[in-house]
Amino acid sequence: FWKPISREPALRTGISLVIALLGVAPPVAAQSFWEQFSYDGLRLAGVGADFGGVLSNSITSELIGGVRVDFGAIAPRVRVVVGGSYFRGSYKPERIAEFEQRLEDALVGCACDSIIVGPITQSNIEVFLSLQYLIPPLGRVQPYGGLGFSAHVRDGDGAVIDDTFVEDALDTVAAGIDAAAGIDVAILRQLTLVIEARGVLTSELRSLSVRGGLMVRFP
Image (cartoon, rainbow, N blue to C red; front, top):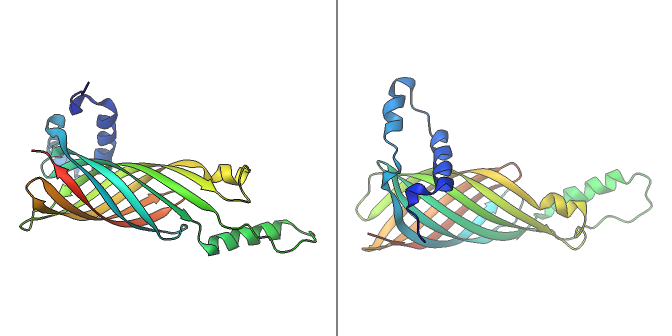
């Protein structure tokens, strides 16, 4: 029923892509750099959940929740984390006003009142894979920085745009690049407090979230 982590082709492919993003070692040291990576250290090392707030360039500030799984070390001081998150927010008033103005400009010669689109919302489901470098700990505090990629499934909704091509345009699947920085604080032997700031860049949305949560560690 449970296959060894090292045999999961999808996970290995994703990890390989992230490693490629980090492949910035100079040519002379390239061989030794790649030799540090191995799938032998991958295992189920922890499971956690987090909660916080998210800011973006288009959506109003909202709450965000997520889960994450630590799959252990793939290189010295480098761990693999896979997770997901969800948030739902409304488009900012200035973005709606810009859309309404463009519609009015397009209706040349129309004897009509000002166009009011009304609120438009969008939900975002994210799945990410991140390589996190563990900075030397400070007592019970383990700082880290991470880089990875993500997939986003978005669903737009609004009374005026429902069942139109505008709604179809907001219902998208997009890829993103993630960067994270945070700390793990050991509360108990197998329980850690996680505090993290995560930035996400996609073609349509740029966001920054700050979250806190708990992770259960497995020996």
